[in-house]
Each structure stands twice: as C-alpha cells, then as structure tokens.
Image (cartoon, rainbow over all chains, first blue to last red):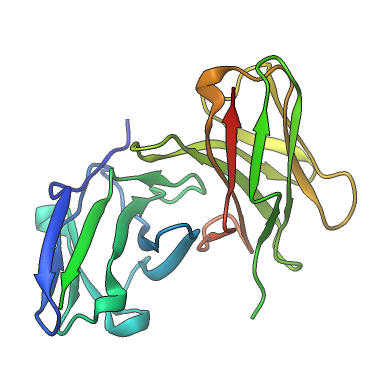
Length: 112
Length: 113
C-alpha cells in the first residue's frame, strides 16, 4: 500500500534560519507529490507540487522542494524562516491517482 | 482567488444523531473529496466523487457515510448515526482534473458527545 513517511514529528528553528523537512514516499511508479501547510485552526494550504520535469520545484512563501527518485524523497526547504511559518507541514502523494495519502506531519516551531 | 468553503466551522452533536457537513467546491472543478483528521493523527482519505458518483472510497467510508451533490454548487457529507469516534476535523477538497492538485476548505470540526 502507498505510504508517506515524515520522520520528524517536531522541529524547532530560529527565525532567519534555514529549514529542511524530510519526506519519503513508497509508491513505485512516478509519484505525484505535494507539500501542504496547516496553520493553527486553518485548513490545508498547498505550498508546492511535483508531477514531472525539473526535480527542484518552487512554491509559495519562499519554499522549495527537491525530488530525488534514487532516495524516494521529496524534501521541503526554506532558506530563511519567518515566525509566521510556524505551522504543521504535511507531505502527500497521490501515486498518479486522485487520492492523497498524507504523512503524519511535522510540527514546526519558530523561535524569535 | 477561488476557494473551497465549508459550513459549519464547528458542529457538536449527540451520539446517534445524523449530521450533514456542507461544502462549496471551486466552481470549475470536477472532482470532489472528503478527508478527515482525528485529533493528533494524520489526514485520512474518505471518498472521492466525480460525475455524480463515488469514484473511490476508503475502508472508513462505511454505510453510515454518504455523499451527495444536491445541486450545481454544494457537496455534502452525511453521517447517519454518529459515534464518538467520528469526532474529527472533516475537510472538503476539490480538483479540476483527476491528477491535478486538490484545494482544501478550512474544515468542519465535528464533536460527538
């Protein structure tokens, strides 16, 4: 069965520091990968997506992600965090279909 | 910017009661979804809906659940006889095509007491 793993449950980073959130997917065929962000009391907002092509994708709010097929990974990065980036981040995969399989999420805390 | 809207934002219901959660997907989208997130757990797929019928459903989506698109704009999730374990945040989502990104609503927090 399709699965998405986010190994980091909680991460704390200082404002202005860089961030990398890890994500590994299990589906064998070309994955359709997404990162969503959920701020407290809010819904899920799409940060970026990867379907094919360039393995480095740009998203909103200064976020990027890199697809590495050899490592089955899709890591989310940001070079300089703002306090407002504190939220929960979810990696997800559809495996080419339309059903999203989510990871367990990474709770990001940003210290001032 | 178009968005998915859900009502109500919070609902408290007694065990055994029926609830209907409502969603207005983005207008030109063709695929509609319900997901849920039990507190402290991951977001789980419930059902997808296309062309006025269910296209896929999860094991969670048993006979107590149903979905409907009663008119050209609304998409509803009905739980016939709620259980305590149905307490969760329910998210509606829509996508333009089968393999394009899904946009989510703000969620309805359902509490069954």
